[in-house]
Structures are given as C-alpha cells and as structure tokens.
Length: 184
Image 1: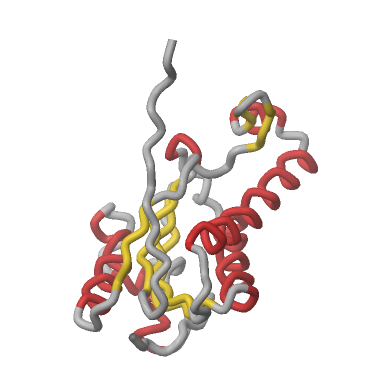
Image 2: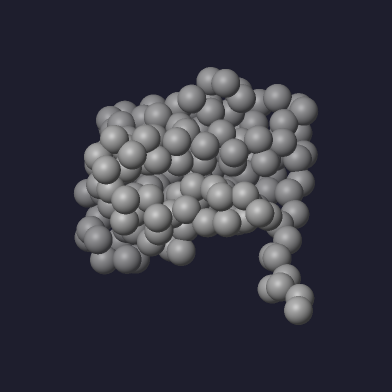
C-alpha cells in the first residue's frame, strides 16, 4: 500500500533574492500562543541572522505559524539551512521545557515515528512556503501582508497593536527585534 505522496517544495537559492517564508506548527496547533514560545522564535531569528548572515526585513509570529521576509547575504546560501536554523532552536527549547515541566501529554502529542525513528516534531514537516522576491516594488506589499496577518485574523484592530511582529519597528524603531535596512 503506497503512502500519501509527500508535497515537494522547490527552493531557488538565487544570490540577491530575498525570501518570503511561512512555516507552521505541527498539525497547525497554536503552539506559539505564549510569550515564552514567541520569545524562542525571536531568539531563533536573531541567531539565524548572525550565524547564517541573513538580513531580517519583516516577520510576524502568529499562534500557529510564522511569516518572515529576509535576504540571505551569502551567495552560497541554502533555504533549507535557513529554515532548519529557524526551526531547530524553537523545537529544542520546546522539548526541554516539556521534559522539565513533566508535561507528558504534549511530549506524546509532539512525538512521532518517522522512517522508523521516533522524533519530536514541533513544526509541520517539510519546508513550508518559500517565495523568491527579486523586485523592490513587491517588498512593501509583502511587509504590509505580513503585518496585516493579526488584523485579518481579528486578533487586533491595527498591526501596531500586535507585539510579535516587526510592524512597530518600521513605525518607530521599537519592538522585540531590530530589522535590517531594506536592499535588493
């Protein structure tokens, strides 16, 4: 009996192209609903920025997914490495927290057997969504789309009210994470 075909994600690692990423929690569960888990995402963004030389332009952390607009500064980058870096740290912190607090229910929910291995799966399998961005005119539209996510979901009335995005940074320089200058 054949299993479900796995959705294939194609990444184009083109020097000078920005990337619009979306990656989701396992089963689209709202695992990013607490400030603690959102802070882990912020830390992973900062770590990835420095370690893999990625310019961060915009982000929003929603309860069950993350949108990110970034520009790899290396010419030999790999989208898979960037996404792996963004996800790995959050997943590791989540597992450590569940073990430390003895939360067996969520440890079991997030543990799956994959290719005969038992793995902790905080994030949806696969690479998520990745769109190359190479034209300056589409950058402001994507940033507005990213910042508008909490408004469309009716979590806030104005993007500036959502503390877990770069909207406030672009408005007044505040927020949990500094963004890099826009360049293409």
